[in-house]
Amino acid sequence: MRVDSAGRAPVRADRLLDDVSRDHARRARAGRSRRMTLLASCAALVLLSALALRLGLRPVGWADLAQALIAYEPTDPEQIVIRELRLPRLVGALLAGAGLGIAGALMQGMTRNPLADPGLLGINAGAAAGVIGGTFLFGMGAPSQQIWLALGGGALGAAAVFALGGGAQASPARLLLAGAALSAFFLAMVRGLLLMSRQSLETYRFWVLGGFDNVTAHTLGALWPFFAAGALAALAAAALIDALALGEDAARGLGVRVGGARLLAGLAIVLLASSTVAMAGPIAFVGLIVPHMARAAMRNDMLWLVPCAGVFGAGLMTLAELAGRSPLFGGAMQAGVMSALIGGPALIWLARAKEGRMS
Image (cartoon, rainbow, N blue to C red):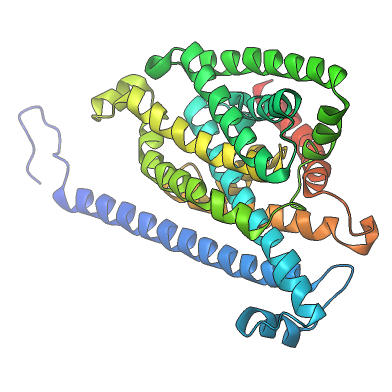
């Protein structure tokens, strides 16, 4: 074997080629595994959606379900239940769960905080302030009016948090502090208004539980463009968030504009979370738990994590909606309450797990 002037054997080219080949094969296996996981999750979501349309206090047969979706008869009571009641609620649950799952994955990736939640950006508190402020000042208590009040309030709250946190140069810690401070301010204002207006209190009591009882085709038609725009922005921001995970200096070295990446991710979070709050009220825990479920399957690759979080979130929200309509809860339990029942114990377990790793 030939040696260099220092007497060391040079690295053989075939060994380098073997290392590259093994790395390529490992990446290919990981890619196939992630694709299969995502496809299996989508198939499970389709089955769960079919069950959500079929089951409830008044179960319907598979034949009636197929007939209602393919050749709707507006005089058939079974088909009316499916098309007019269950289908809008199902689509709402799918959009809300996917939106919160994606927003939570982006939020945790952007702040590098595993306990971050879209509500920390002031979206929920801003939406609540918008709904109660509109009801108190202008008597706008109808569900069709609440949509725009919540959407505007949530977007305004997130914009205020972003501005207070430092704008395009905002750090994750400053964003979280600004979100906590502004949320406390908004919620204090809401409580003050509730003490002064019984109508506002009645509106808030129903809206704050979170659910899909008031979701109609009109609601979905008004809000789906916001969900679509948020999903596209999230996919565009996913690769940039991967670079930010390496640190700001490393991200800049890769040509990523840190401020622009955070702005794009923040825009996606605001669109998705505000639209969800506008449609269904403040639903807790989904945006916190789902990213951890997706991360267990996809690791930390945001390009895979974002769509997986969307599918997992849609499934979890559909499951909560289906469980709330089961005879066990009298068919009238709000999906937001069910998600809290699922998410509360999960949050305690997650906090204890993180504490154990840090100790």
